[in-house]
Image (spheres, rainbow, N blue to C red):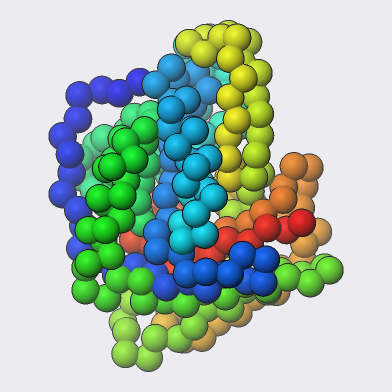
Length: 247
């Protein structure tokens, strides 16, 4: 469901260097947030693309299901009004008002059509070239009962941000009974099930120990951490991120 849109200019911003924990070592170069809906006939190609991108250890690719198409005949079983509010907040910060599905927000800095892999790769490359990009190491480690999060310091930087934990369901097949995708079974990948603010990052080294009992609900089998400029209502660029399976 794609309204007429004007491609927004990329925001110049610092981004991330992240270090994955034991189970998935690598340095993610981008965070991709796909705003999608089970009631959107244009979304399945984007959902498949995110499934492919999620296999790339240099990317943190997330599905963020929205609820504003629910009135069309199918209530999205994974959607949250918090997700819809996040997408609208991005549009306010960009100043373009572009809220649609499927939409991928890259690094919190720019948006592209969610099914357009070339546009996604171009946006990642352009943001990588900006001064100060990929600058904040984020480290995760896991033991039997705790997820440990460590954010590095950037002594010369005046950047700050909020630290967000996203519990994820890595693969969720959904049989859709009504609406535009009636009769289809679509698999959603790295589905964000909650947003938990761990605290603020002000440039100094910071750490949190999160009990797994507070994260692992039914279906939760991975987690992502993002350090993002701005606030929930006015989100900015993502300064650092990491992803870890919980099983």
